[in-house]
Length: 491
Image 1 (cartoon, rainbow, N blue to C red):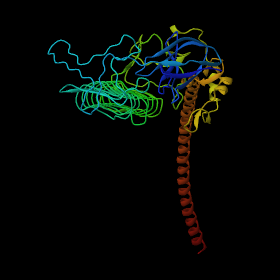
Image 2: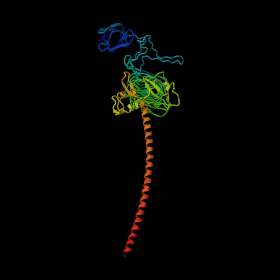
Image 3: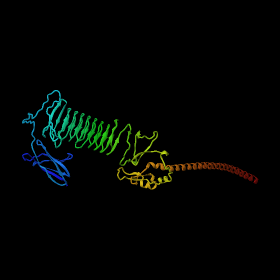
C-alpha cells in the first residue's frame, strides 16, 4: 500500500491553474519523490509515496512558487494539499506588439572591464536570473568566430539545446538537451547528446557524448549511449559503448569497449585493446577480452583473483607469447609450467628441495593404462563431441590425477600428470625391447651358424653326387668292356 497526495492549484482569484508542476520532495534529503502537472481544472495527483516526511511545491511562471512543508506520509491513504498562487511583480518589464520591436535590450559598449548587456541574478535556487517562454530563444553573436544559442527550454521538462563557440556547428533542432560546447564543425542529433570540443565530431544517438578530439562519432540513430573520450577517427556506435581515446578504434557491440589503435570490439560486451602497430585486432565472440601487446604483457599485483570457468578446446589454460613476466620472477634459463591451485597461479618446480613425503609410484602406471577414454558433449558448451577421460572413473583408479571442487567432488583431470605416470611403463617397455633385441641377435647368430652348416652339407652332397656320377660312368664303361670280351670268346 502507498499514499497519494492530491489537490487543486488556483490563482489568487480562485481560477484553476493548468500546467503547474507540483512535486513531492523528501524533507530530509531534498530528493523528488514524485511530481505531476495540473490538468485544465487545476487538479493534480502524486501517488506511490510511502512512510516518509515530505514537502510539496507548486511552480509555474509568472507565479510565485508555493511551498508547504513537513507532511507525514504513512503507508496508506490520501493527503489533500491545495495551493493558491499569486503573480510575481516584475522589476523590469519590456513589452512589444510588433515583429521589429524589442521588449528589453541591453547593449554593452565599453572597451574594457567586464561589459554586460543584460544580467539577471537571483538569491535562491527557486528563481530565474533570466527567463524565456517555451517559444523563445537567446541568439547573439559573441564574435566573428563563434555563436551562443539557447533553444526552447522547459525548467521542469526536457532541457533546451545549447550551441556555443566556433563556426559551422549543427544540431537537429528536434530532440531536447543537445549541447555543443566549443570547437569547430560539430554535429549533434540525439536527445541529450553532447560534443565537448575538438573538430568535426558527431554525437548522433540518445545520450551520446564526444568529449573532444577530431572526427569522432558517438552513438547511432535510435540507440542509447555511446561515448568517445577523445582521439582521432574513433567510433562508439553500440549501445552504451565506449572508446576512451586513441585512433581508429571501433566499439560496435552493445556495452563494448575499444582502446589503443585499430581495436575493434564488434561483439556485445567485448573488450579489445590494441597496441601502437597498424595491425587491426578484433573480437571474435561476445563478452570476450582481447589484448594485442607486441612488447609483451606484464601484470603486477599482490594477488590475482580468477573467478569463473577457464577452458580451451583441450581443457587447458594457455598463455602464449615471446615473454611471460612474473613478479617475483622465476629463475632464468628454463621453462616453467603454470597452474591454478585453489585460485592461485603457481609454478610447478621439480627440485627435491621443494618436496616432501616422496614415495614410489607403485602400480599406478598400470592403472593409468586401464583408464578408458570416452567421447562426450558438454552440457553448457557448444562445439560438438569431445574426447577425454571422466573424472569420477579416474578417481576410482588413480585419485592423485583428479582435481576436486570445494565440496571434494571429482571435477577435472590433471592431464599434464598422465605422462609422468607412464614413465615406468615406458621404461619397462624399453627394457623388454632391449631383451627382445638381444634374443633376436642370438637367434640371428644361431641361424647364421645353421645356415653355414647347411651350406657345408650341401657342398658335401654335391661332391658325393659328383663322385656317384663318376662311378656310374666308370661302371658303365666296365660293363661295356665285359660285354665285348664275352662276345669275342664265344667266336
